[in-house]
Image (tube, rainbow, N blue to C red; front, side, top):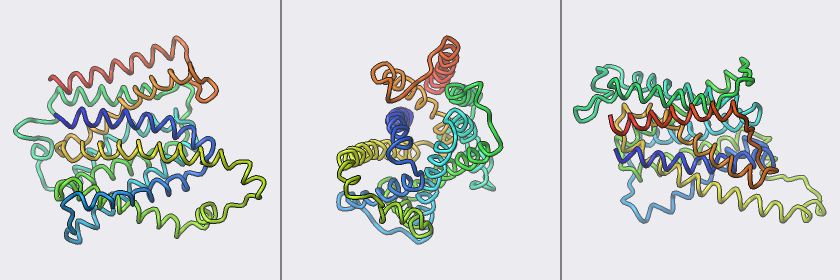
Length: 323
């Protein structure tokens, strides 16, 4: 299962991105719509790959499917950033992480309507959702929820709505991307999907006057501009560096989606718990070295909770790999 090591590597890079996102979203770039726009528009860089691959224009239906997959992904990012901007991560992330794998299963059933379950959830004669794989799935989902959960994080109806929508959109983008890769070679499919993300970014720009104002009409005095020039350059550098890491993670994530059988998509989604493990480790290390940049609550109760979560995720990985 080459896809397993690939997706874990992707989630490590996404953990690094999440730390930088936390800094950018609470400081220099506080507007999720602006942030989602720049993430989407940077997808245009994939066009530089065209001379190095056997790129071709597929049939219109595949182009539209690819565009939809890319657009839904950018839309999911927007709702994720908006949720993190409005609410504490401990309120939205557990709900998103817990529901996304189940949305993936439901969407696979819907999109594979008419096929018997054993054809959807099997590969090469191996039953993907065997008892051991179901146990691994449960351990991974429980670990993902537990590692991000806070007992005092009250889930309001508004938080639930945002989390449900975000989880659904991410799940939909994964399933749509898989169907693209079932019909197109990886790099061709990836490029067309990213182009769809670029179009989604331009739609954001066209529909939102607030976004156009923030991007094209910065209202700062000359004194303010020069006094913050170094800060803006530094912020831009951090953003671009972070998006470079994010691009690598996105490529690896899509590669894993392309390699894994259709029935494994929910497990790929559930494996996001490994990202939270990496995030926890990195956050604790940063807290000790740079306590003013990022704070992580440390107590015996929290350590016990995180330990159980890590053991649950570890158990899921062991079962998935060896049973």
